[in-house]
Amino acid sequence: MENIEGFVRSAANALGVELFPAQTDAFQKYMKLLVSWNEKMNLTAITEPRDIVIKHFADSLTILSVLDVPDRAAVLDVGTGAGFPGVPLKIAKQGIELTLMDSQQKRLTFLKEVCEKIRIRADLVHARAEDAGHDKKMRMKFDLVTARAVAPLPVLCEYCMPFVKKKGYFVAMKGPAAQDEIAQAQKAVKELGCELQNAKELSLMDGSKRTLIIFQRVTGIPAEYPRSAAKIKAKPLS
Image 1: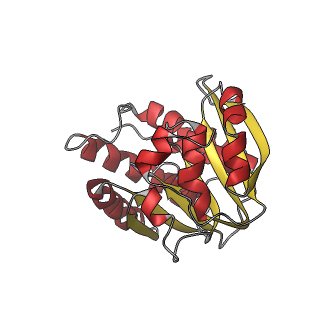
Image 2: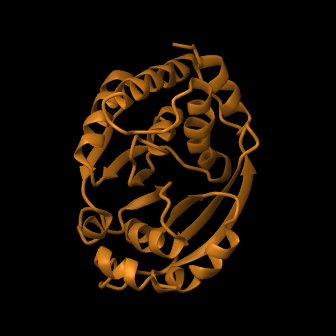
């Protein structure tokens, strides 16, 4: 399999993120595991090594180019899937305390092996966001919450914002046309005790566009949120 260590270093450097040999080696091992496991279960439609670097690894690292994430920050990746953006963030910023949450146990089984093979520590939580958001061990406990999910922003906010602690951040990773979603989410953001800090547009090495929408918690959150998944989808906060 192609060695992508130099390429992932260049992709990270383009975002202002410096990687050392042990970190590029971790990305190489991660890629191999992703491709291997993808033959047994559907983890990603992206399987070419350089595409994985750009569309998964570098895309995940864009968070570090727009937000200062300190060591020891408690980071939660909601609906992590194959580990994006959480695992690349942990590889690049080893001091963070990472939690990976997903509703499918088989994905967490894959991520357990990834963490063991590349020697990173992460808490793996098998749960749905609408349930975990009411868990006292997780509710308003994280400095940074991330999601690369495809849900509309008002829905994503209700799934993710309950985990954000006071003055903490939620970063929604979106495509190029995010302004309409931001406008539609204004009610949800206010109702969930947060405010919009920034919407940063950027380009990856292949020219594809991304928007990172950054919210910060400014007040508490009403006890009824998050609602059930059925209610969130039937009547979004918009």
